[in-house]
Length: 173
Image (cartoon, rainbow, N blue to C red; front, top):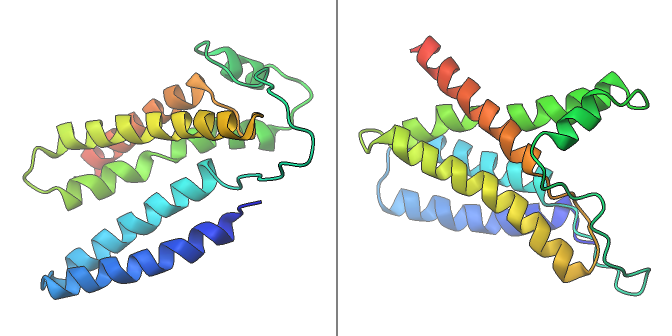
């Protein structure tokens, strides 16, 4: 199983190279800190949404797509109206997907100052959210079973996080 540790093991050397390049280019300390925060934010999103990746080929291997959801709002309603789920699980599933993308609105405009940050933030958000779900689906296909649920509702909840982040950033300014 490729666990979170694997991600952190490979992300630290990449970060060190990234840091050396920033220092070599004589980037200011404020920008280095900001870019470092964004780097670790992206690594955290990858850790939460992609890992762990089960690589246990000799165990039961089958294609099971029953948990994936490609119908908008279906899993949101299933979660909200399922009496067998605790409030904590409901909050984690729904609010977690919303909160996941709120920081993006604070970090991207700071990194992309003066470069049409709204359009760039929107593009980065769309690519990020879609990439996460597509990568989960692709890894499931490669493993021949659904290791993480591919869910269109995750993208919809990420939209809410993006909108909340936008509203919060305007309110704070």
